[in-house]
Length: 531
Image 1: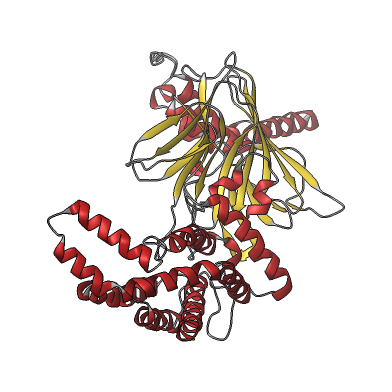
Image 2: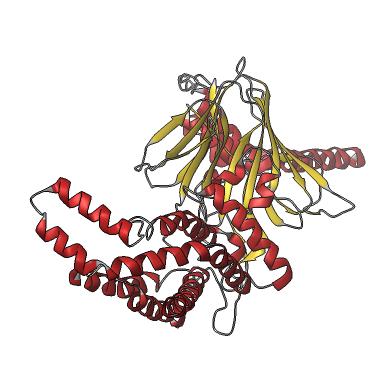
């Protein structure tokens, strides 16, 4: 009897202990409201109306982040870039360019420091709360390693992120990377539940701008650029503004002097290019789509890398047009090819610039010689020309006839001194733009103190020499006899010297060599005239 009683007490105690451990310990007492403690006689609080879908998504997101999925980063080494992806929003967190370094020798990261929700590739909807949820949601990741290295044996790799909320909406993002390439194929899709009200249009964006690389300088356009209807379009926006471009959209990009991030559409139906700035001034650029039946299903190419002319041409979408060689682009691009050809043999862009300048000078030598001789003849007839001008100052017809007679007798073409110079100007301007905007000169050394042809001469030696040679050239050039004009021309070397102090040293070397060659040319012409 005592045994049965003891056993009954023991089993009762065991049940009580197990009950406390498995049930009561799981109850979150902080969530028990005072009215629940007092008993059932107190009525439950009235039910509030259901919150809108965006608020439901926010609550669902918190649950998913904290309980189910942890934030994770995946690194992809393509050989050209190290790209860091985050499953928070399924976005790109960093793009390190392995071949291009900062001044302290670290790979350049194109993505600026920003909030997670502003990172590329960002989705923006009319419903801001819904946008914030999608861009902050912690996506799941299809089975993959944390570090992926591409090579000749493994030329591409695809990473897929996917997210599902409580309403059944599924969002997936796929990124495909290629060995030794800066382009990324991107696919974004939705399935299941519908997009929120107003979600028929959505934007795919690169933001927030581009990180400065320290070599940009103040001589190049930096900002958004679109290629619309085979023409370049640039925008400058105030804070909190937005602009659209419609038509045949080739691509839309954000650029600085040497680097760019471009969004290139694959599907071009129901499409606009969009540029906007936040109230804080953060810049975004990308594409706006109209979804079909409340669903998203599109593909585009993301290019985040250097403005390498030859590489950009391989994509066959006129991406190389973003390198602005100015009005004389048709001359600049062949000159650029010749410069690169010389580099293959010299392995020094400074020497290549000198060789190219010498060749251009030789090509134009006959024209320059005629121009100089014509100016010499004009200088000789100045006294007689002044007499004619004074004698017929009130008779324009006779003045014109007498001047033409004087030119004929001395075998002078009045525009002969200027026409050869005018013909040469486009070539010099084209070469100027090549040297100003070519990434090939970035961190490319020349000799001794010049370690970077894209940066200014640290000791200002080349711009001072350039100014001195320009002064010598002015002294040697025949003047028109006008004392005021002669004084103005002597001031020009001083102005140019100060202007060139902060120009890229490669550009200054070009002007310096050109001046030295012009001085030598004028000396030879003087000797020829004396004979």
